[in-house]
Image 1 (cartoon, rainbow, N blue to C red):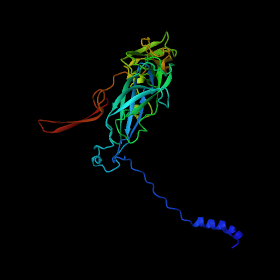
Image 2 (image 1 turned 180 degrees about the vertical axis):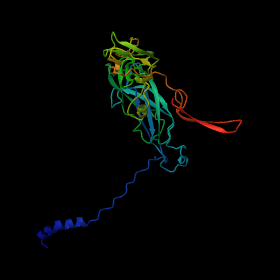
Image 3 (image 1 turned 90 degrees about the vertical axis):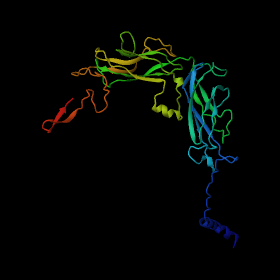
Length: 372
């Protein structure tokens, strides 16, 4: 065969070889079992956390740590076969250190806020712990400007007293906290629940929610339900009702964030929000149209981070009167009788009664229809 002929048929031979070639069998992957060289399983800790969104130097800050033990028995271990029994992957009580740092992705210049003991965590389980810490005076390296964001970091097994499979998850992601100048409350009405259509003279039982967005508890504070011809609390405004609240915890005492701790907080209102329903009150009968809103601390008795703006919050419009329809609303107290008993205690419907004569021995029955 000439060399030119050999080159001519070479691509065909290559194609034929590729077409007829059998694919190699892929080997099944094998994942190594997660046990140590010591011959038994170890715990593996992962920590995340949340903290109050605001705080002040010298004030308090609540921090919630979520500690997960990802370790599990992966080899024959007679003492870990029954559910709930002891395992070498269980972790005993451990020390958690709480730090605050001016840098999001670095512990450079970090200051220790304190430590606490986390409880025993069985294998493949988690625990949540909330602790309160007092912040020091502003440390060196932390900017003095109010409103700066600093970061809280949590360190699990910080004294290395527990042997774990890996230490890569022992440091939590950064938790942002805004530092303000003073430890003071910041009160704000966040909700007013009343009937959707109000007219002058209606009787209502309002439900009001007040939040403390500051860095210190409020202490005793008054909340006013105000009627006004403008959206401000000024001369000519009328206080319809005045309520007293003993205390509203600060936002710094309510850890919030995106970890497991926030799941429960979505279902349960945070402690920094107080909701109450006031007794029935009657709205003013004039003018024909006005505004109804909430004013927290109407007489300025509570020192706050920012002074009151003098404006109504959660405003609703009252009026104008509906022609031919008298004022309405709550006119009696709620019934405490269990269903199906009405407020009067007498069932509504058809009642059957029977009686027997002692002289004749005969029985008679009667039916009574009760309308109310």
